[in-house]
Amino acid sequence: MSWNEIAYMVYLPISIYETVVVGYRFHKHGLHLISDLFAPNVMLAKTTNNSLLVGYYLVNMGWITLSINLWGSIETAAMTFLIVTRSLSMIFIVLAVLHYNNIFWLYYFSTRQHLLKFLTSKH
Amino acid sequence: MDNYIVKAYLVYLPIALILTLIVARIFFRNSKIFMSDIFRGRMEIANSTNKLFELGFYLLSLGFALFIMQVTGVYDITRQQFFEILSKKVGTLTVFLGVMVFFNLYMLFRGKKKTSENERLRKRAEQLAQQRLANQ
Image (cartoon, rainbow over all chains, first blue to last red; front, side):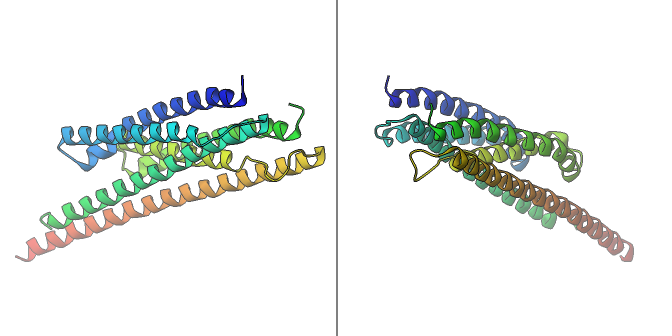
């Protein structure tokens, strides 16, 4: 078995497991924040949440399958470690940036909504 | 497997994973109290926000930990270089984790400040409205 195949067998399960688990958790905990934003309209919050999850899965799975193509041939054990961890780290960092971006926009819209409610109330 | 670079990877990986795990567990166990204060006892949304920040912390820290793992420029290293490289990497990761913890603390304090500011504004507006009613 070549080093390439070993790298695939290590990389694919870890990355797919990570994608599914992290997506499930974002989906589960983000619902409260989004339904707080879309206050009385629960269905709109749920559909937004589901489309965010689908977009997340598409981006992540596409990234995983594309990144395997870019590896080239692997010749040593050290190189296997290096390429697998480098690919995983790129996934993690890009996901983290997307996640903080999402949190920022949620925060932005919720503060704007609170401000609007405050200004349009009777005071 | 007799290569010291591979040994360095094998020693570094568990250290990085366990360090990140311990720091995140300790920090986000304590930040729950902050969150319940920021969201004024709405525990559902406080717990969700806490979990989302925890996931972001894990993703960024693990991504950074794996990103700085590679040993570049050399094919084999001596035992002395092995310890030097290992300490450099673990040290960088620890400093990064410290910076992340302070960043999260900053966000918590900011949220706390915003909540108390909003409450003060609301109280002031109510007071003004009552005064206006009394004057009429």
